[in-house]
Amino acid sequence: GAGVSQTPSNKVTEKGKYVELRCDPISGHTALYWYRQSLGQGPEFLIYFQGTGAADDSGLPNDRFFAVRPEGSVSTLKIQRTERGDSAVYLCASSPRGSPASGELFFGEGSRLTVL
Amino acid sequence: QKEVEQDPGPLSVPEGAIVSLNCTYSNSAFQYFMWYRQYSRKGPELLMYTYSSGNKEDGRFTAQVDKSSKYISLFIRDSQPSDSATYLCAMPRGGSNYKLTFGKGTLLTVNP
Image (cartoon, rainbow over all chains, first blue to last red; front, side, top):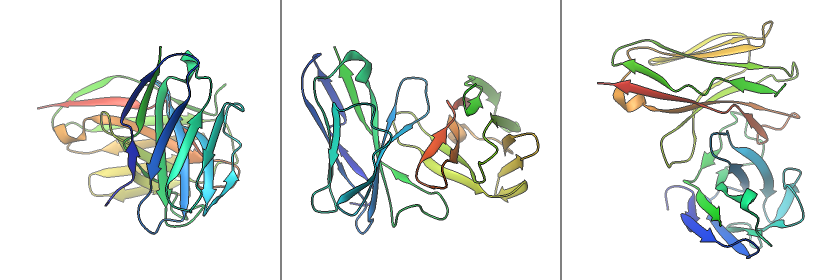
């Protein structure tokens, strides 16, 4: 597709459940990022992939959060034992290469997660 | 003190007005400054990118950086209803252009 695609667009789950959020970056983009945007806040960095490997996972809040990108394209963000505080919009972004000179990240529309 | 402070608004102006959006920051190591625009239920999109102090103009948009005051601004001339969105300032940290620190965003409504 033309842009970053994220599924599902909305996810409602119960506290303690496991959730997977998927991101399909722009074709040809080698760098992929996950950000989290809580209500009324700006996005916060979670993790950066260059190719298949996580080059920087310093933003993951705890070990309940994990992300993979096994073939260097689609990425999945996995959240175990969800908590109400995990409710947010999870944004995926991509760029042609890591650390883009212009700082331009191409964001998807996000997956809105609600934990009841 | 948060690294980036931005008044969340909301800001409501009539069509044709000049809009001024601002952020302050505390980390003097920030060297690059960005403005992203985010429409409701959409992802942010890059609007302006500046490196040094001074002004940068792109159509109706002007980005201004004052590093001595740690203050950045975005001006929108001849504002249009289609400019109604949340405007987020952002700065890369740690020398990595992908690890952006965002302000909270200012919600702007331009009324026809």
